[in-house]
Length: 144
Image 1 (cartoon, rainbow, N blue to C red):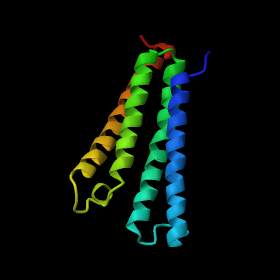
Image 2 (image 1 turned 90 degrees about the vertical axis):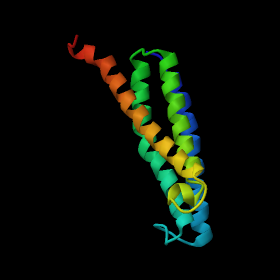
Image 3 (image 1 turned 120 degrees about the vertical axis):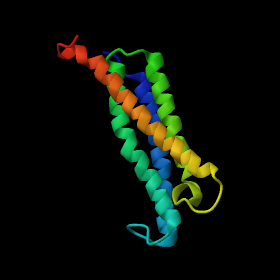
Image 4 (image 1 turned 90 degrees about the horizontal axis):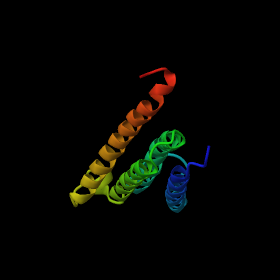
């Protein structure tokens, strides 16, 4: 068994992004002196959600990606899945840079569109990855 290199690379990128988002939350909290919650500050709330949303999605995706890689799935396919997931999460993060994207406030339609594409893509990539993983492991349980 070899190191799941695509998963390792993807984890490194997502970890760096996660830490950057965490730092932005902490810095904003310090600036507005809000220890927990958002204190009604929509900018802080937006930063909290983009940090939390990545945490909610990345860990289970990385686990599935590692299992795919360890099942000897095509490195090209695993790499494409990983790249699509990272792109989807980046779209979501960028969408939350604006209140139009996070709170559907007045503003450019680009941010809500990026949020939708990022969220829908994340869901579809997750479902597709789960199905692909099932197909890969099903034969190990005496399946056809």
